[in-house]
Image (cartoon, rainbow, N blue to C red):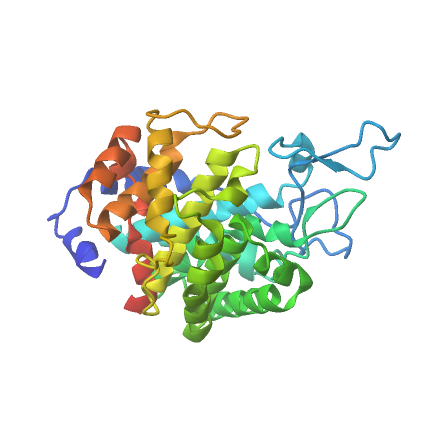
Length: 371
């Protein structure tokens, strides 16, 4: 990563991925600062600094006059979730910040650094606007609860947040105080994830929710200087996640139960790949973990390939169109980790733009070991 960074100012490296990154970063400069306070309703705590959201697949019961309690319709998103914008706004902040931070790190332009810093300060650091480090009221179900463990899936991209902070470290705008504040926020959030009932419920989840809980805990632990926690998470993921989630033929039965089975199978696989990348930071090889009866991450990918290419018809439910490009970043990483160019060729066939998106490569994970 540092070698790549050094070649760009010297004009030695020109690449479509870098050109696309610059375009994306310029667009991210237009992202206005957002705060968890930008919502009209308050959570049960009465404190708008607390993140809140509504469960997406829960709807009014048509057989009840007031519709309560809500009932589940898996895979069907209730538009009422738009009433609380915290989830969407946080996603926008993290996405823009990561793009800006990566662009700053590679191109050295202070405009990217300055705007990324502004976005992070507003959402996470400024006492007047920051989010409290918990998801106590995430994915509430009306008439049932005020929040639940499954809500933790809404911060599954938090690795981008901690990587952004790592990429900004030492820049002109992102001060030592900012770095310390971000580390303190993440440490509190990690503690909440591991100690709260919502966190414990999500840790116990056997499907993609459990996988992404592990991704978040490991990412946060590495960022705040607790590598032993991260190492334990990835070490246990072999037996706890891979062995329990993947069949010997590569099927993921807990995801196949869903109404968007192909989408969730791909999503969970991406989470396991992220755990594999995280494991490289703590000396754990999840890529080659294999049970006696052949359960492993690569087998899960190979199972999906003929369906995403259209060679075979998907035999399970998928009630909305699956965007096959979603699996292309996984294929690119697989080509590197399994030293098999066929995965990359397939990724490009599925999504010709994939190699122009620098964030599909595992560069971001190197931030933790470079500082």
